[in-house]
Length: 204
Image (tube, rainbow, N blue to C red; front, side):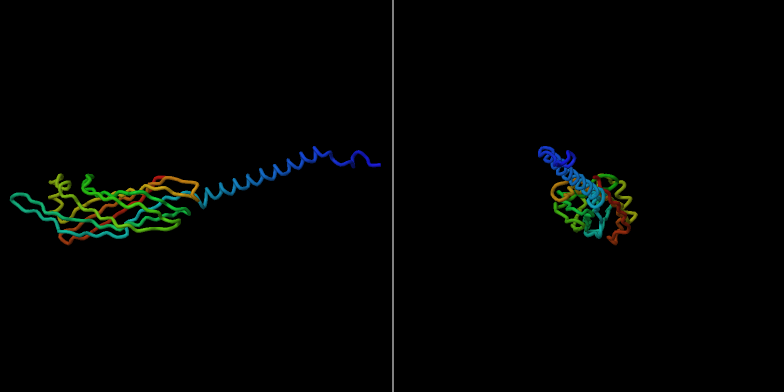
């Protein structure tokens, strides 16, 4: 005769116990998965800012000239830049149409649109940027322009803005705007870039 302590558990109690074990295992699995995803999100998949760099710059056109006694300024200059957009993420960076501006004494004197594109994870791409200086806009600051031309150099700035989206596995998406700011010193009549300083930053 079996004692009460050796009797098997009733079926409802065994079924309930089995459900607890299975449910606990599933919860533990989801918890581990959550921890793994969190670690990846904070390390490997953490959003890093794309960078915009100027890798080459050149001038083409005619050296500025001033004729007197009637002031007549002849100026035909195009700034040719090659930009490199570097994606440092383990995810693709899809960027929309960008914009590049050239400024003289903080006033916009030329602009150009940049084509959209997709940069794969940990990849980079180069894009040409051809900025033609608009003479009418430049001549609106006539006194400074005459002084700079007579001194043999012009100091100008460029501003580049490229908006886009970092795409993690087609599920997680984060907006990013890559920006670049450069200062150029153009030497005349040699028509060469004498000095170039650039800064790159990104807003996530």
